[in-house]
Image 1: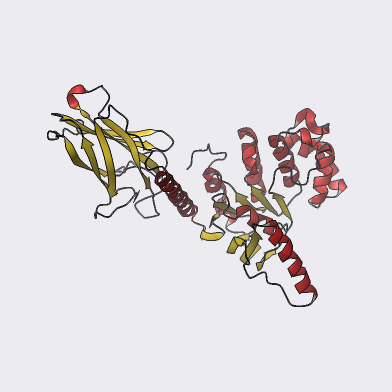
Image 2: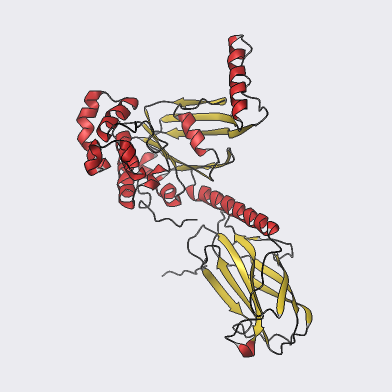
Length: 437
């Protein structure tokens, strides 16, 4: 999961913030619902207006036909000078939650208390008029963020220098790239002197140089007591910048903790399970289209993965035993068969290969008809999703196409937080032994 390059260095200032204890945001049991049907939106909206006019009260707490909860009973608090990371899959409710905090949406249930001036970077170019120039939009957007003309005049040069949009300052912003939108919008927001800044992923649009400059600026702002809520799919950003993390899934809270590594592990395992479910569904839809590769004299019929207790499983942790049972059908006799396993991460990286020959195992003669072979592997892979490639060939004909080669079975490795298993990076968990004098 952590494939992106880290835009910032490791957190080096969080401990200094612990002494600042003023609570600046409190979100208590908020929920927000939407309707999938435009006609329902209009009907329900009109109904709510009429009910309020005649004093019958709102029915916001009831899910009506076609409605769904984008955010469901979410709570957290944020103190001055701290940063909260919000992570989750697309559609988990992150942006909806930010928009409620920013006042764009009103919660249907629960309450939000904010003490301080809020600056928000939720959508690229939000608040910009496309026909006006960058210069004109600085004044308009600054005014929206609560700055007076005198304040904008005093900070204008700093905003332009930070945005670094060059000769495009006096061009209509409709001609700007998404990166230029972000640079200008971020420059205005941070110079509006907010006490709370909401940042929703959009910094990833900028180039790496601008990302680093932005995060360095945000670190300096935090030291001055500014609080942040950061939504990002870049786990390096979350791990390096945030004091606490909220993990959302389908609008619900999966984790809320100041143990950042623990929260990232919850998120990573959640995404891996979704990926596995997607793979299973894809295999169910196309189970008859998998093709054996090789010369074709042998066909792999089935593969079963089990844990050390013999239970069917496709989810393992570091240090678990992976047991496999492979059934195949052969149309020929093979005097010196050789069996192979290849472990391939789903991004195409070949992570490991083993053969009976490498293990100095001499399998018995293979006869025509149905056969079976089993294997057992001690899992040392880090978190991720993997394929198992299976092959049967003739050891005497090494270098030629195998009788069959099939990449078919998928499994995932999840590393739940535990005293002896930490979330790692790379392919293998090395299980190093240390000694000291």
